[in-house]
Figure 1 (spheres, one colour):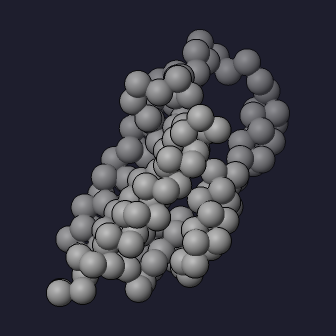
Figure 2 (figure 1 turned 45 degrees about the vertical axis):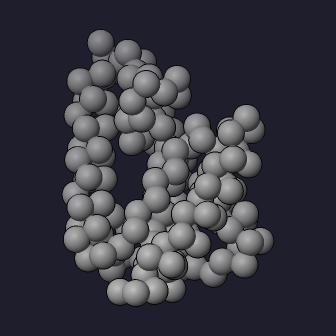
Length: 146
């Protein structure tokens, strides 16, 4: 099925999509900053350019949009009906790139936390944020003896 928008409209729509500083990412950052964590953002020197980096805890966080990163069995991940072959390939490439980045970071001894957009919806938000905080603090104990 062909695209329902003209090339110009599609280009404009795609240009409005943010790659960093997204709402889910800002929710996580605001909470963690309030908990006393200090971090770096979007460091290109790291594989996959993690959204949030905690050098002190040797931990990185990727905040994934359910659609863009192909969150399996998630109601927010629905492949578009128009141009679906292109979208399927695009999302598969994103998933592949995510796996490569995680493998490289783990190989370098980093702890990886992946937070999905749907986990930050109001029903799950507090629980998710508390788990992230606990996991970061837990990684500090794990790195103490390294």
